[in-house]
Length: 198
Image 1 (cartoon, rainbow, N blue to C red):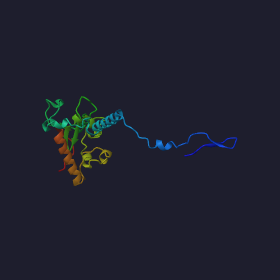
Image 2: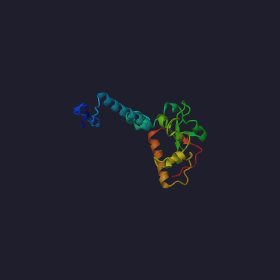
Image 3: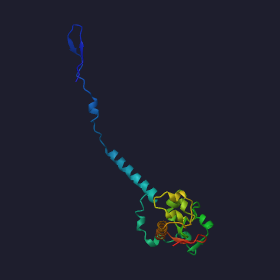
């Protein structure tokens, strides 16, 4: 504590002001209080982030919680577009290119190992603005031979040629075929694709 003293003309010292304290010490220990509004804003922000993450990851803001109750039969049932058509249907590579999601009146088709699946139900993933759009409208079997999180699949050109792949790569392709068979309607096959490897 400091005292401010001044000399007066007569030589005696007089106290001019009160003792001065350092007020900065009190400010650094000040407590922040959260109001109910702050708490609701934080919870709302976390909820919105969760919904957006669900939309980006699964294509649904509800993380597909309600879709999980759909039976296996309903998952692989062809959509109304295919009613009255003979299935499985043969597609040429040129015909398959028309089903890449750019025409909203046509379903989105994905081919792997010569087998064609209707992935229109997940247009957020496979549609024109989806992360897997480059895999539709063509047989990109080789892209499925890479590990799940590998970006190499998106760097190389789309190809259905599986020659020269390791056994591990071929097994990954087989697992992806199984994945699509269990989750999407099998619509047909590609007529002019390369011969399938075991």
